[in-house]
Length: 185
Figure: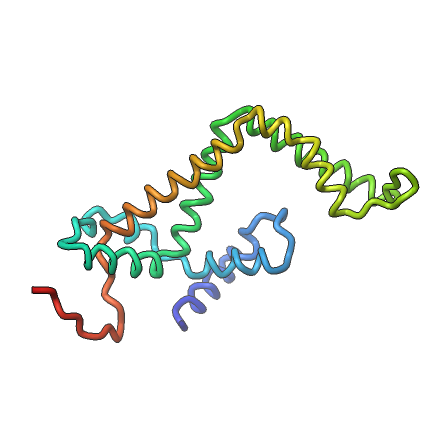
């Protein structure tokens, strides 16, 4: 526990704290704190992708044990693999980029409009949640044309394949205080 604190202090001394590396678009709050915790607990990428540590499990018991232990051990790395797959999917789909631009553009216009005055439709004030739902409704046809549904399922499928195969074939790291394990006969 002391080692990550020392690394964080060293990084802050160099001017590279986790708070400065996070995008400024992420507002402070629960989401930002969660992302900071993920970044603080990320395992070294060198050991994560070390080809010498990959092998086929001997049996189903070892496979299940590897899946559970590796998902626990590399949880933060897997989160960033998932985010990387999302980014890849969005960047390689121009129509999805257009749909996202329409959605965020509509949200930004609504945000600017609420700064000036409250939005009133048919004599009633419209809440921010309803305004963002309206932005989603406006951009829904663009998401439909862009194939956002298939993109979501592609990301989920690719994530399951990449993370599942890594967790299944990556040898388990020796933990401190690990209890004695009996091998099946």
